[in-house]
Length: 212
Image (cartoon, rainbow, N blue to C red; front, side):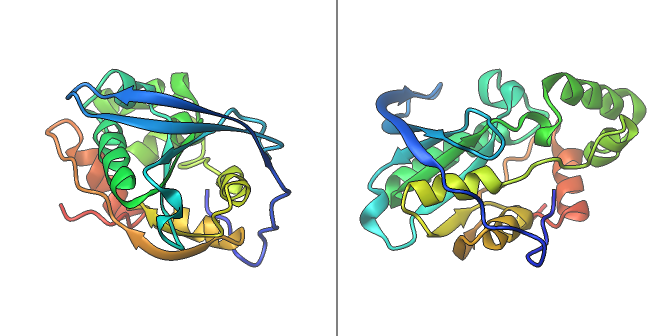
């Protein structure tokens, strides 16, 4: 979902609800500790999380990733997307640089898990790309709104960030909501035979920074 700067409004204030340290262990054995933050008064009412990794105060603009929840990729290792490998890469890079991973409850670019699986079926059996599959279901190509992400960053005291993302819309929406994006840092390209068409659609349709 693209929000234009001239129509965006400054999000209301959110506050940190709690913080708990959790040791993380990834399937490849990588281990790191994260301070996991929860929030009050987020605009969409969803239970988004912010993971503080490394030393977020090490730089004036911490490294930040907005990672949309992907059960199939993050948990089950689906090769139809690049979400799981991006999550693993982001945790390591943010830990090294210091910053935050915002884990946003936006399954399927905001359309939900069941709808995402229906869209997968249209991609596999109908030959549609990831965006046309959504619209064929009567749904937005991308329903994500990053107002809550901007609120979370404000509550964490991060008005300026280096954004770890290939998606220009994330930077545009954060900027429209008053967050200074000093740099957009691309993630790696996690290409598999199963996700090549998916990544190509993102590069061609929404101008993701992907060298394919």
